[in-house]
Image (tube, rainbow, N blue to C red; front, top):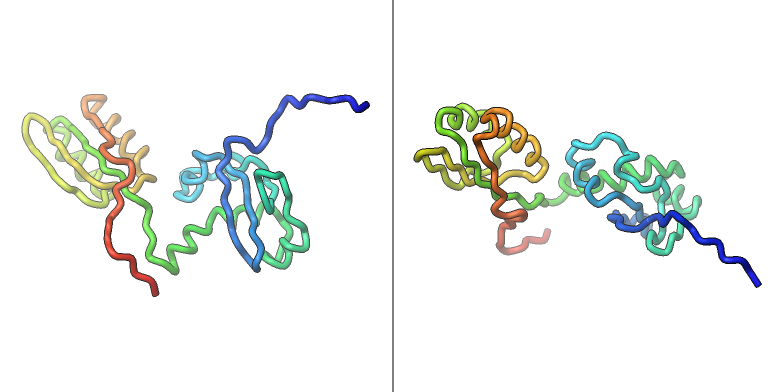
Length: 183
């Protein structure tokens, strides 16, 4: 009869799995869900904050680690930390070859008129498209932004208006519908 030893720590749960197919083999890395986007946009700089483990897997959910020979044939190295950085940078590489864009967020700013015009100039570089502007008792702007700029915009509005301005998320994913084009 064997003795059952309980484990106190459960790893690889609540993860975002980043998959990559290379040299005919599939590789996966285990990341924290909320950190992958931050790494890709350049906000997160510490790789340890993004990865749950520096291991490269064949299957994260089964805990199957990739073989050393497979890593060398696919990536030219068996340095798993470096391979994890390829996997996380793959979106940037795809953008160079394909026309892909992140879905924009639709926001509404309500700003005091006296600070609003000055603040609008500071916000312009962070805004993709201004859909509407309304000058009344307050300045109201509805616009589309890249999700990576949200925190910077939010902090800028709070700081410049001293809490008098507000920011409202109208839509998390504003996707442009249309015909798909394959080349």
